[in-house]
Length: 189
Length: 301
Image (cartoon, rainbow over the protein chains, first blue to last red):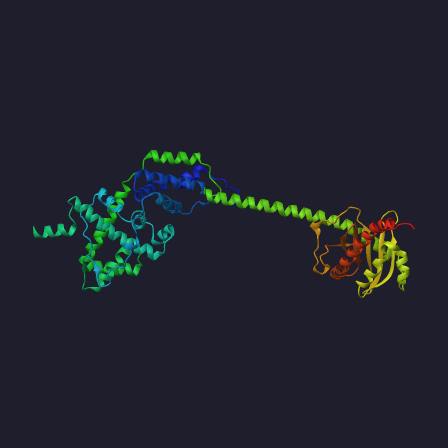
């Protein structure tokens, strides 16, 4: 289409701005510094505005904005430090038994879990954020990240486990005990 | 990582479903199965509770990251300052489209120029070939200036005069299947132009081979019709007044083959005749120039 259809900034703001907090939080959680997250979300909104004529009103604006977010994220990532290699974490689990689950602290502080999240390789972090925080379905995540459904499922499973391990380390450093240790202490009292 | 070998295979199977259960991605039947297991298995129930706790904590912690109003206002300001782009804001795409547009415009301009050039060329060709067609129609068809029985060659040579007499043999030799009935110098009433006109019969029709001086005019290359059978002589064709005419250029002359035969036959005949006629004309022209020089150089005794 060579002739730009009429688009109104008011329509764009009404459709896109309600998702600003969710986009900001996701961008912030996927970048290393607060300023990078802010730059990223600004870029997302500018790109969305420039291509708003292609957006069909009434369809899922939130999913559209998240797709743009992850598209831009790839550009930003080149500027950021290389994320940890994913392949090392994507090994299949032991077939002879299930891994012992990492104990979880009874009280989880915001800063602990955000710190633990920040230590996850970014490919796992993306999927965990989209599934557990933004509550996208597996299929929506696969479309947003352009990944096969099976990869989304395996990354979510491994991402949750890694988050739990990191959380145990972080909480342990602050003297917060995991629940099974607390339970054991309670039993002995 | 420590590995615990559960005795219950069911626990192992259920734990593999817990991630999908937590994301509400299980089928209804599987969800029921997981729920029934959780009711009876304290270990798996605790595991689900731990996973839920981590997820809820993550959700809460991220939700507590509140964007500033300043950032929101900055975004709205930048959006309002930016014109929406019909190319989706991609500079690479914009360049690609601009480049493609430029290529289309240039190619279009070249195509139009070529088309105009060909059209102009066609008009010039039609104008030149109309000379031969007019003479064929006026002299041979309407004027019927040929006998039913062919004139003897010596009569024809005399009518052609010394300058063109030699061409009679060239025409006869290169027109197999055709008989030269008449050859003369003629003109169309009202025009000073002279034509060397060979009227022939063959293929149950009358065919004219005509020569006339080009007087500096040229046939345009844009309307050129190449013929492999012409020995490298450029041929032009036109359909005028119900006749097919094929023309060619020689030094100072236009040559025409005109008949009501179909286009391909006319082209084939002209293709055979063009080169020998061209050569003969050029030799004849040279002789015209040289003869007086030679004559003047002979000493009077």
